[in-house]
View 1: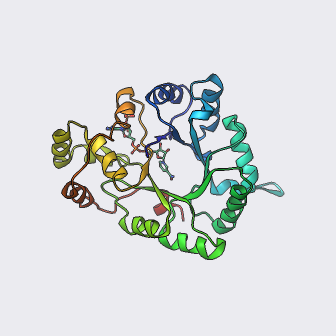
View 2: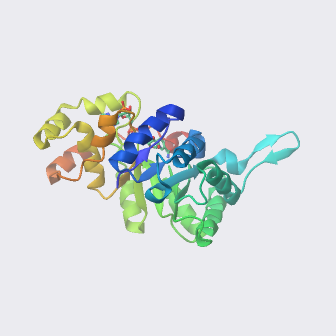
View 3: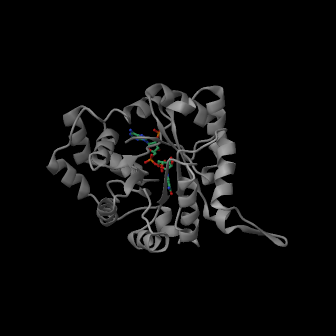
Length: 267
Ligand SMILES: NC(=O)c1ccc[n+]([C@@H]2O[C@H](COP(=O)([O-])OP(=O)(O)OC[C@H]3O[C@@H](n4cnc5c(N)ncnc54)[C@H](OP(=O)(O)O)[C@@H]3O)[C@@H](O)[C@H]2O)c1
């Protein structure tokens, strides 16, 4: 239910974070072509900092890879399968566990049908999308004949995403929350909320832990990122308390539909 988000970590910073996540017991790791850290994670696997058999690797194909870039007289573009192979090479592994379309880029339904083929060929354990709204999920269904297994979206107390959540629940799509603490100045705004601080105190937890609990208690997977060893450990430690219905409702009520995600920028 709780994995580790790796953006924007790279190089030594990422390696020292992964030393802590491995020891803390994180299994799910979220990466992407865009994050330019697939090879850094591959290096950690080859050094034995992470053990391949203990981790669930997620990566994502970027629109620019699939749609392509014009280079002189030819279009430099990759099929989903070739992008996948390149990512495997960077991770120094023969397979990636979860492979997603990073956003609803041009020709996303065609790309998703290639992703379905990759799944049916047994190359990947789970496939899905990220930053898709209800309309885009419906289009995918119409064009590909199935809904994605996963939709990774920006979800935190200021962006509760209720309409997408109920649609995904109805269609059996697993929602995965990115930026669970918000982004930029939203992080401190959320952390300084006095009522969240009161709830946290009541359970002997931090505001960060209360937010993660609010997410997993809704059946949502989440991928917080931290470079602080104590917070990395804290973020997994949310399974020994339960928020009441009124506390869940209170956190829901903080929604302002305030998100930064590609969903809002990348169409
Ligand atoms: N699919 C997409 O389009 C997309 C977009 C954005 C992100 N993502 C994925 O989602 C992951 C997480 O999102 P994110 O990195 O944007 O945001 P996030 O995990 O919500 O927030 C990270 C920030 O929260 C702080 N933090 C972490 N744990 C905390 C705690 N327990 N208490 C207080 N502060 C805490 C971190 O600081 P410290 O390091 O100092 O702890 C960092 O500043 C990314 O790493 C990436 O893998 C996906």
